[in-house]
Length: 527
Image (tube, rainbow, N blue to C red; front, side, top):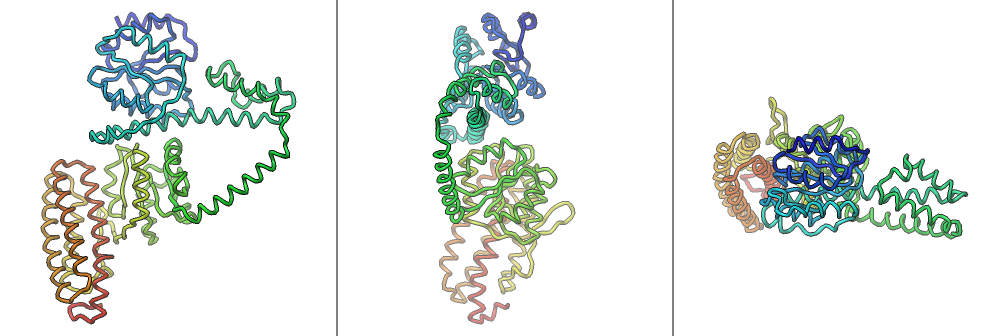
């Protein structure tokens, strides 16, 4: 039956822009839906899911994109890839999910938040007329949805799915906003046209590269309205305009100078233009930012812009994120760095952590999560531990500058460095659990020895130091329970915690009692 329907579709005459394109995964589940669509005599094409067909679909600019899904989460990622990879070729469209009964709740949330415009249960097709109704409605309507809260998903432990939906919504809005911006630019460009009816249309067509009849119906209508209103613009006073613009520019310059005195600075190094536009929305009202798409540009911008934090992708052209971090650290720069990597690249985090990584995020991440990570990195910068490369691995290393002046405690710190290094480079669950348990036991012994020594020298902040130890013990115990559900992300998160704890424990907290002990000439401490 599916082959018969496809034969019918092939006999139909298709223009460049079909009404509906369907992407399906299982031909048997979509056969009833195809019958419904064919009955509407729409310009329609169907393709089996294949990443290589994305470009073909983008070029055809469908009015409605039907995504037949056996797994909504996977379909969301596929649609995000479509939006991201071909943003320059995507025209406004409606995106409809065709799902099975089990996926109803996820489909509803994706639609509620504006990533998809509607969904239809097609497996089984319980309401045969619903798909027809949805298609007829969507072909007449191109509208925006407001993005609602995703807290329900987060509470259910579906943070990754929530991130995908939120990111996809921003991606989708970005190309719609580009069309709106184009209309505004066209209006501005035609203010100087003398023959307002004839020449304005010619200018518009030169700007957009096509005739109005070839454009998307909603965009064409919007531009035609602009043309109709241009006659009224001739009556505007140019002198008043210039006066207003001068005043506005002066005020903006004053505001900008004030903001620059207050706001912290973040450098965003990310190869994808679409990702940078998404990230831009996050920071434009809270932080000063610079965007770069190339590794060498990032290195130059670090020296000139002097950011308070860096959101750094791994897959940058010319120089990747890890090599950039090595250059930053070799120059003695302690700026907080947050890695921003694709799921497929997250194994490189293990190589990145010993270089002094503040945190890492997997693309796509929720806007709130990105902003929270950057603000936390800026407000709580970590110390950087000396590192060196041994064979194919980078290790953190204890050096004499880290001495607290007491030989026994220094030897214990050296052991901690060794144990943390072993955990950083461990490859499996059982090994990681065993190493972490041994480390936790040794930390208890070290804390006891340190606390006894502080009491002996009457260190005035002994109780505060002991309190910090207690908080750390509690944190260590909590992380140990998480290891029972071991995966790469848990390992990386604990490794970053251990690095930051070791750096702050020795290079900051312990140096405070060293200075006290030397000031009272305690015999067990030496410079």
